Image (tube, rainbow, N blue to C red; front, side, top):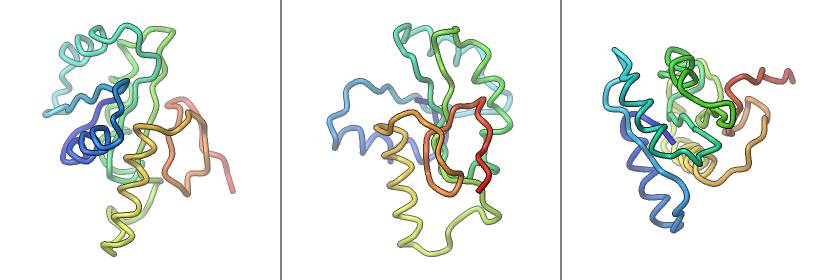
Length: 137
């Protein structure tokens, strides 16, 4: 799993609390210019990885996902799948209510670490295939 920013610490805390041992978390410190060689090297360190997850706490239409998705896909083999884990698209960058933010943050962290791979409604936090299109409601 790859991420940037403080969501790394939430992911790390959840992985330790749940004693998850089959998920590696790599924090990208710099996204522009994109560290293509370092990213590819990290991918090569885990040759058995079938899912490569980008996790961000920003809504899907904000943050880094749309700007770096193609770079995340480039070094993957045909056996690996790029997935997104984070908040659904939204007009505002944050919930604006601490309790709602906490619920959303816990949901996206749980989805990133444990959730089954499937496309769900864009209205909920989920792990989406990078090539999937959003279902209309």
